[in-house]
Image (spheres, rainbow, N blue to C red):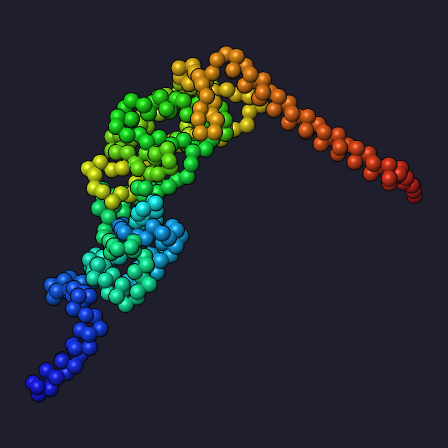
Length: 347
């Protein structure tokens, strides 16, 4: 019986070695790791995967599609909205939100190597001359901290600055030095235009970097914004703006969480007469495309009021024209039908 067993093992192992080759044979998990992988009693939890060395020749949608197919082959289906691809001229990487067991996460490198050997098309996902990097992103954020909140990935592109969007890098001592000045200027400018948002922790190019912002920093920022806006004239009520702190998912480990501060000024409500807001220091600012104008001089304020009144006058003239046209149509209808006669009978 013993020789028979040996012959069967030889017949199975030789073709296996020929198909893989000595150099391409993947590392098999040890008995200890297999024991760990078999323990599935722990509930699945949320993790952020870092996928490096992606092929920058492909576009972001193509990379996301290929990456999603790769993860499906690894028995890890992921929704498209949970894949954030960051593509730059010479490199690309991705951050993926997954909910899996810890043992499944630990076996990913070995299973990725096996999938690459079986499906050659997956090799196109990696940059030329490099192997895919697949690991869990290390950072200060856990699933509990971002539940119910927005989140941004470090390196993500948010677009360009517009009349309703302003970016500030916010490095160094920004929160203690420059933040209060920007709050005054940009909130006032947004109030005197069509509303908008100030995002701190985003480069002028639109790339998300985040700033170090602890819970104590959040409290200080809230108190600072509230104290400054209370001095605006006309009075600003709390529903006129929103201050939020968006977690930034990063592949680098930092002692203080990275966040993007978003101060949004809602579109001012329509007033019976034009309103011009001024800061707690009596200054007036206006918003232009990608910049602000101010503080305005007395003549500039008068010109702003004149132009606003002209706009309101134009709206009233349009309403008058519409009412006059409606009146003429009603008169024409009455003339077409002629006088209406009625006969009353008394019994």
